[in-house]
Image 1 (cartoon, each protein chain N blue to C red):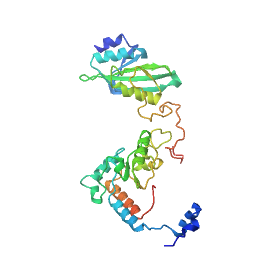
Image 2: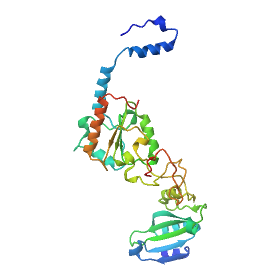
Image 3: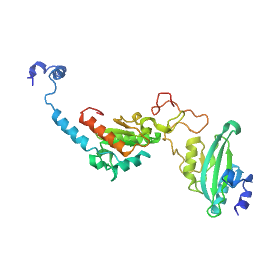
Image 4: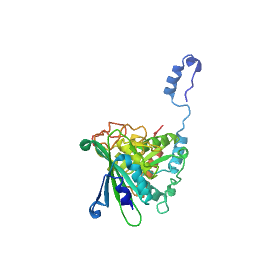
Length: 153
Length: 177
Protein backbone atom coordinates (compact mmCIF):
# COMPACT_ATOMS: atom_id res chain seq x y z
CA UNK A 1 0.00 0.00 0.00
CA UNK A 2 1.20 3.47 -0.83
CA UNK A 3 0.25 4.82 2.60
CA UNK A 4 2.58 2.33 4.33
CA UNK A 5 5.49 3.11 2.03
CA UNK A 6 4.99 6.84 2.40
CA UNK A 7 4.63 6.78 6.16
CA UNK A 8 8.33 5.87 6.38
CA UNK A 9 9.33 8.80 4.16
CA UNK A 10 7.20 11.88 4.72
CA UNK A 11 7.18 14.12 7.75
CA UNK A 12 3.46 14.63 7.86
CA UNK A 13 0.40 13.30 6.01
CA UNK A 14 -3.05 14.82 6.26
CA UNK A 15 -6.23 13.47 4.73
CA UNK A 16 -8.19 16.40 3.31
CA UNK A 17 -11.69 16.80 1.96
CA UNK A 18 -11.51 16.11 -1.77
CA UNK A 19 -14.63 18.15 -2.54
CA UNK A 20 -13.08 21.25 -1.03
CA UNK A 21 -9.43 20.88 -2.03
CA UNK A 22 -9.34 18.71 -5.16
CA UNK A 23 -6.97 16.10 -3.77
CA UNK A 24 -7.11 13.39 -1.12
CA UNK A 25 -3.88 13.39 0.90
CA UNK A 26 -1.40 16.16 1.58
CA UNK A 27 2.16 15.30 2.56
CA UNK A 28 5.00 17.45 3.77
CA UNK A 29 8.44 16.11 3.02
CA UNK A 30 12.08 17.04 3.10
CA UNK A 31 13.35 17.70 -0.44
CA UNK A 32 16.26 15.26 -0.02
CA UNK A 33 13.97 12.23 -0.07
CA UNK A 34 11.94 13.28 -3.12
CA UNK A 35 13.54 10.55 -5.28
CA UNK A 36 12.57 7.87 -2.71
CA UNK A 37 9.03 9.24 -2.63
CA UNK A 38 8.88 9.18 -6.42
CA UNK A 39 10.15 5.58 -6.39
CA UNK A 40 7.44 4.63 -3.92
CA UNK A 41 4.75 6.15 -6.09
CA UNK A 42 6.15 4.52 -9.23
CA UNK A 43 6.18 1.07 -7.58
CA UNK A 44 2.48 1.51 -6.75
CA UNK A 45 1.61 2.40 -10.37
CA UNK A 46 1.02 6.07 -9.72
CA UNK A 47 1.74 8.68 -12.36
CA UNK A 48 3.03 12.21 -12.03
CA UNK A 49 0.31 14.77 -12.68
CA UNK A 50 2.28 17.97 -12.28
CA UNK A 51 5.05 19.81 -10.50
CA UNK A 52 4.87 23.44 -9.62
CA UNK A 53 6.57 25.89 -7.32
CA UNK A 54 5.78 28.81 -5.05
CA UNK A 55 8.03 31.74 -4.23
CA UNK A 56 7.69 31.94 -0.42
CA UNK A 57 10.96 33.72 0.27
CA UNK A 58 9.26 36.66 1.93
CA UNK A 59 7.56 34.70 4.73
CA UNK A 60 9.30 31.34 4.97
CA UNK A 61 12.62 31.99 3.19
CA UNK A 62 11.88 29.02 0.96
CA UNK A 63 10.75 27.86 -2.43
CA UNK A 64 7.94 25.33 -2.07
CA UNK A 65 7.98 22.55 -4.65
CA UNK A 66 4.57 20.94 -5.09
CA UNK A 67 4.24 17.48 -6.64
CA UNK A 68 0.96 15.79 -7.51
CA UNK A 69 0.65 12.04 -8.02
CA UNK A 70 -2.47 10.15 -9.02
CA UNK A 71 -3.42 6.68 -10.20
CA UNK A 72 -5.88 5.14 -12.61
CA UNK A 73 -8.59 3.01 -11.08
CA UNK A 74 -9.50 4.35 -7.67
CA UNK A 75 -8.78 8.08 -7.79
CA UNK A 76 -6.25 8.91 -5.12
CA UNK A 77 -4.47 12.20 -5.58
CA UNK A 78 -1.46 12.88 -3.37
CA UNK A 79 0.14 16.29 -3.01
CA UNK A 80 3.71 16.55 -1.75
CA UNK A 81 5.02 19.85 -0.39
CA UNK A 82 8.79 20.16 -0.15
CA UNK A 83 10.38 23.44 0.93
CA UNK A 84 13.89 24.16 -0.26
CA UNK A 85 16.19 26.93 0.86
CA UNK A 86 16.85 29.52 -1.87
CA UNK A 87 20.06 28.97 -3.88
CA UNK A 88 20.18 25.25 -3.10
CA UNK A 89 19.42 22.56 -5.64
CA UNK A 90 16.54 20.12 -5.36
CA UNK A 91 17.01 16.49 -6.44
CA UNK A 92 15.59 15.74 -9.87
CA UNK A 93 13.03 12.96 -10.34
CA UNK A 94 13.24 13.11 -14.13
CA UNK A 95 15.05 9.77 -14.28
CA UNK A 96 12.20 8.13 -12.32
CA UNK A 97 9.26 9.93 -13.97
CA UNK A 98 10.28 11.17 -17.44
CA UNK A 99 7.24 13.47 -17.30
CA UNK A 100 9.11 15.50 -14.68
CA UNK A 101 11.73 16.56 -17.23
CA UNK A 102 9.86 19.53 -18.71
CA UNK A 103 8.19 20.47 -15.41
CA UNK A 104 11.59 20.85 -13.80
CA UNK A 105 12.83 22.86 -16.75
CA UNK A 106 9.81 25.12 -16.41
CA UNK A 107 10.43 25.64 -12.69
CA UNK A 108 14.07 26.39 -13.45
CA UNK A 109 12.99 28.86 -16.12
CA UNK A 110 10.33 30.65 -14.07
CA UNK A 111 11.83 30.51 -10.55
CA UNK A 112 15.55 29.78 -10.96
CA UNK A 113 15.37 26.62 -8.87
CA UNK A 114 17.99 24.13 -10.05
CA UNK A 115 17.62 20.36 -10.03
CA UNK A 116 20.50 17.96 -9.35
CA UNK A 117 20.64 15.05 -11.76
CA UNK A 118 18.41 16.55 -14.43
CA UNK A 119 19.50 15.34 -17.90
CA UNK A 120 19.23 18.70 -19.69
CA UNK A 121 18.35 21.62 -17.43
CA UNK A 122 17.80 24.66 -19.65
CA UNK A 123 15.06 27.20 -20.25
CA UNK A 124 11.85 25.93 -21.80
CA UNK A 125 9.47 28.89 -22.19
CA UNK A 126 11.67 31.98 -22.39
CA UNK A 127 14.39 32.47 -24.98
CA UNK A 128 17.69 30.92 -24.00
CA UNK A 129 19.54 34.21 -23.51
CA UNK A 130 16.84 35.62 -21.23
CA UNK A 131 18.24 37.25 -18.12
CA UNK A 132 15.82 36.55 -15.26
CA UNK A 133 13.13 34.33 -13.77
CA UNK A 134 9.74 35.94 -14.45
CA UNK A 135 7.57 34.37 -11.74
CA UNK A 136 9.72 35.54 -8.83
CA UNK A 137 7.86 38.06 -6.70
CA UNK A 138 10.60 40.68 -7.08
CA UNK A 139 10.94 40.26 -10.85
CA UNK A 140 10.85 43.39 -13.00
CA UNK A 141 11.06 43.13 -16.79
CA UNK A 142 13.34 45.95 -17.94
CA UNK A 143 12.45 48.06 -21.01
CA UNK A 144 13.07 46.06 -24.16
CA UNK A 145 12.33 46.32 -27.88
CA UNK A 146 9.39 43.94 -27.66
CA UNK A 147 7.37 46.20 -25.38
CA UNK A 148 5.28 49.24 -26.29
CA UNK A 149 6.34 52.59 -24.95
CA UNK A 150 2.79 53.88 -24.39
CA UNK A 151 2.85 53.18 -20.66
CA UNK A 152 0.10 50.57 -20.80
CA UNK A 153 2.47 47.85 -19.73
CA UNK B 1 17.26 61.48 -74.04
CA UNK B 2 20.13 63.91 -73.59
CA UNK B 3 23.46 63.32 -75.23
CA UNK B 4 26.30 62.92 -72.76
CA UNK B 5 29.64 64.29 -73.79
CA UNK B 6 31.91 61.82 -72.10
CA UNK B 7 35.25 63.72 -72.23
CA UNK B 8 33.66 66.44 -70.17
CA UNK B 9 33.09 64.22 -67.15
CA UNK B 10 35.52 61.37 -67.53
CA UNK B 11 38.08 62.81 -65.13
CA UNK B 12 35.71 63.17 -62.22
CA UNK B 13 33.30 60.32 -61.40
CA UNK B 14 31.32 62.63 -59.10
CA UNK B 15 30.19 64.69 -62.11
CA UNK B 16 28.68 61.61 -63.69
CA UNK B 17 26.45 61.10 -60.67
CA UNK B 18 25.30 64.72 -60.81
CA UNK B 19 24.61 64.49 -64.50
CA UNK B 20 22.61 61.32 -64.01
CA UNK B 21 20.39 63.06 -61.51
CA UNK B 22 19.77 65.89 -63.95
CA UNK B 23 18.72 63.78 -66.90
CA UNK B 24 17.02 60.95 -65.02
CA UNK B 25 17.34 57.25 -65.77
CA UNK B 26 18.46 56.41 -69.29
CA UNK B 27 15.87 53.66 -69.61
CA UNK B 28 12.42 53.94 -68.11
CA UNK B 29 11.16 50.69 -66.60
CA UNK B 30 7.72 51.93 -65.55
CA UNK B 31 5.68 49.78 -67.88
CA UNK B 32 7.58 46.64 -66.98
CA UNK B 33 7.38 47.50 -63.29
CA UNK B 34 3.61 47.97 -63.56
CA UNK B 35 3.27 44.65 -65.28
CA UNK B 36 5.37 42.94 -62.63
CA UNK B 37 3.41 44.56 -59.81
CA UNK B 38 0.19 43.40 -61.41
CA UNK B 39 1.53 39.85 -61.60
CA UNK B 40 2.81 39.98 -58.05
CA UNK B 41 -0.50 41.21 -56.70
CA UNK B 42 -2.40 38.38 -58.39
CA UNK B 43 -0.14 35.58 -57.13
CA UNK B 44 0.65 36.27 -53.50
CA UNK B 45 2.28 33.21 -52.05
CA UNK B 46 1.98 33.14 -48.27
CA UNK B 47 4.43 31.40 -45.99
CA UNK B 48 3.01 28.31 -44.29
CA UNK B 49 3.04 29.06 -40.63
CA UNK B 50 0.56 29.89 -37.91
CA UNK B 51 1.32 31.18 -34.45
CA UNK B 52 -1.93 30.70 -32.53
CA UNK B 53 -5.70 30.57 -32.89
CA UNK B 54 -5.83 33.09 -35.79
CA UNK B 55 -4.08 30.40 -37.82
CA UNK B 56 -7.26 28.31 -37.57
CA UNK B 57 -9.16 31.11 -39.32
CA UNK B 58 -6.33 31.40 -41.84
CA UNK B 59 -6.69 27.66 -42.57
CA UNK B 60 -10.45 28.12 -42.90
CA UNK B 61 -9.80 30.94 -45.38
CA UNK B 62 -7.59 28.58 -47.37
CA UNK B 63 -10.08 25.70 -47.33
CA UNK B 64 -12.97 24.97 -49.69
CA UNK B 65 -15.69 27.25 -48.29
CA UNK B 66 -13.70 30.48 -48.67
CA UNK B 67 -10.84 29.30 -50.89
CA UNK B 68 -7.84 31.63 -51.07
CA UNK B 69 -6.99 30.06 -54.43
CA UNK B 70 -9.76 32.15 -55.99
CA UNK B 71 -7.52 35.21 -55.68
CA UNK B 72 -4.28 33.36 -56.33
CA UNK B 73 -3.15 33.51 -52.70
CA UNK B 74 -3.70 29.88 -51.76
CA UNK B 75 -0.28 28.54 -52.61
CA UNK B 76 1.11 28.29 -49.08
CA UNK B 77 4.83 27.75 -49.45
CA UNK B 78 6.65 25.50 -47.02
CA UNK B 79 9.90 27.40 -47.56
CA UNK B 80 10.49 31.06 -46.78
CA UNK B 81 12.68 31.23 -49.90
CA UNK B 82 9.60 30.83 -52.11
CA UNK B 83 7.13 33.02 -50.21
CA UNK B 84 5.95 36.59 -50.88
CA UNK B 85 3.67 37.24 -47.95
CA UNK B 86 4.10 36.54 -44.27
CA UNK B 87 0.68 36.24 -42.61
CA UNK B 88 1.39 36.67 -38.90
CA UNK B 89 -1.60 34.74 -37.56
CA UNK B 90 -1.62 34.74 -33.78
CA UNK B 91 0.12 35.76 -30.59
CA UNK B 92 3.86 36.22 -31.02
CA UNK B 93 5.63 34.92 -27.95
CA UNK B 94 9.02 36.39 -27.20
CA UNK B 95 10.75 33.09 -27.79
CA UNK B 96 9.22 32.99 -31.29
CA UNK B 97 10.41 36.51 -32.18
CA UNK B 98 13.89 35.37 -33.25
CA UNK B 99 12.72 32.56 -35.59
CA UNK B 100 10.18 34.95 -37.17
CA UNK B 101 12.90 37.52 -37.82
CA UNK B 102 15.03 34.78 -39.38
CA UNK B 103 12.15 33.66 -41.61
CA UNK B 104 11.51 37.26 -42.66
CA UNK B 105 15.15 37.70 -43.60
CA UNK B 106 15.03 34.47 -45.60
CA UNK B 107 12.12 35.67 -47.72
CA UNK B 108 13.26 37.23 -51.01
CA UNK B 109 12.21 40.80 -51.84
CA UNK B 110 9.69 42.06 -52.71
CA UNK B 111 7.88 40.79 -49.64
CA UNK B 112 4.93 41.88 -47.55
CA UNK B 113 3.57 41.19 -44.09
CA UNK B 114 -0.03 40.99 -42.87
CA UNK B 115 -0.64 41.30 -39.12
CA UNK B 116 -3.72 39.20 -38.44
CA UNK B 117 -5.65 39.66 -35.20
CA UNK B 118 -5.44 41.77 -32.07
CA UNK B 119 -2.32 40.11 -30.69
CA UNK B 120 -0.23 41.06 -33.70
CA UNK B 121 -1.54 44.61 -33.69
CA UNK B 122 -0.51 45.54 -30.15
CA UNK B 123 -0.40 42.42 -27.99
CA UNK B 124 -4.18 42.16 -27.60
CA UNK B 125 -5.51 40.48 -24.46
CA UNK B 126 -2.01 39.43 -23.39
CA UNK B 127 -0.75 42.97 -22.96
CA UNK B 128 -0.86 44.05 -19.31
CA UNK B 129 1.51 45.72 -16.86
CA UNK B 130 4.34 43.37 -16.02
CA UNK B 131 3.82 40.85 -18.80
CA UNK B 132 7.05 39.12 -19.77
CA UNK B 133 6.02 36.60 -22.40
CA UNK B 134 4.83 38.20 -25.64
CA UNK B 135 5.84 40.69 -28.31
CA UNK B 136 3.47 43.64 -28.20
CA UNK B 137 2.73 43.95 -31.89
CA UNK B 138 4.17 42.35 -35.00
CA UNK B 139 5.57 45.74 -36.09
CA UNK B 140 8.18 45.37 -33.34
CA UNK B 141 9.93 42.71 -35.44
CA UNK B 142 8.79 42.98 -39.10
CA UNK B 143 7.49 45.91 -41.21
CA UNK B 144 3.75 45.33 -41.46
CA UNK B 145 1.75 46.37 -44.55
CA UNK B 146 -1.82 45.52 -43.55
CA UNK B 147 -3.37 45.13 -40.11
CA UNK B 148 -6.49 42.97 -39.69
CA UNK B 149 -8.45 43.65 -36.49
CA UNK B 150 -10.48 40.91 -34.87
CA UNK B 151 -10.05 38.18 -32.29
CA UNK B 152 -9.78 36.18 -34.41
CA UNK B 153 -10.75 37.91 -37.69
CA UNK B 154 -13.21 36.07 -39.89
CA UNK B 155 -11.85 34.64 -43.15
CA UNK B 156 -13.64 37.47 -44.98
CA UNK B 157 -11.46 39.93 -43.07
CA UNK B 158 -8.32 38.13 -44.19
CA UNK B 159 -9.60 38.33 -47.76
CA UNK B 160 -10.20 42.05 -47.32
CA UNK B 161 -6.63 42.42 -46.08
CA UNK B 162 -5.30 40.59 -49.12
CA UNK B 163 -7.36 42.84 -51.41
CA UNK B 164 -5.92 45.90 -49.66
CA UNK B 165 -2.44 44.48 -50.07
CA UNK B 166 -3.10 43.86 -53.77
CA UNK B 167 -4.17 47.49 -54.14
CA UNK B 168 -1.01 48.62 -52.42
CA UNK B 169 1.19 46.49 -54.65
CA UNK B 170 -0.57 47.62 -57.84
CA UNK B 171 -0.21 51.24 -56.79
CA UNK B 172 3.50 50.66 -57.26
CA UNK B 173 4.62 51.87 -53.86
CA UNK B 174 8.17 51.03 -53.01
CA UNK B 175 8.40 49.23 -49.72
CA UNK B 176 10.59 46.74 -47.90
CA UNK B 177 13.51 47.38 -50.20
